[in-house]
Length: 261
Image (tube, rainbow, N blue to C red; front, side):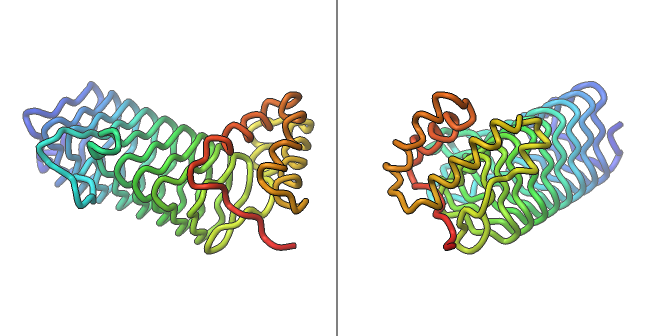
């Protein structure tokens, strides 16, 4: 299961069923869970914990030092990856920084396609999809079921809400609320991610309420405060709208603006 050309540090811990390809380096402090498959020419650096049933394709760099001017290598920081994730070729993921909490986290069942980068202190949820070349700056939060199309860039400290869709080459510099589609440079909210919500099994009543919330936020020329006040009664009837308002209420960078028209 371990190719003779692989280099495994004595301080690494490999569970049962782990496969390691040729010319891959697994460093000290790396833990790999059961039945995970690591391809050829990968570099895994610790402290990093990788869960079960992950697939890491060739030429990935997982758990390297953060690209941070004030990073102090004497302070321990780490990367934590859950189960059943897929990382395609040339993906790079960095550990956290002491000032950012010390950990980069990735959940379960994510599909991270080729050439993607996840920087220090990011938090990626579950069931997300990153298309080729999607890039996260430091301290970014990606919530469950979010989809980032190819070449999407997310500015540091931004949040991308659950079941949102970021269109190809979007540049996100403010928080993208749940359930919405954003596009452009800089990204603006375009519509409700109806297809994504249908695939997740959202009932028609919830989708209709989310569409009304989108219109209130972006089509009625209201201030953000006024829009939130108008949506409060709807949030009391619909948990999805309540989730949307909670996300906006916690925003520190502000939310993406709507497109004209």
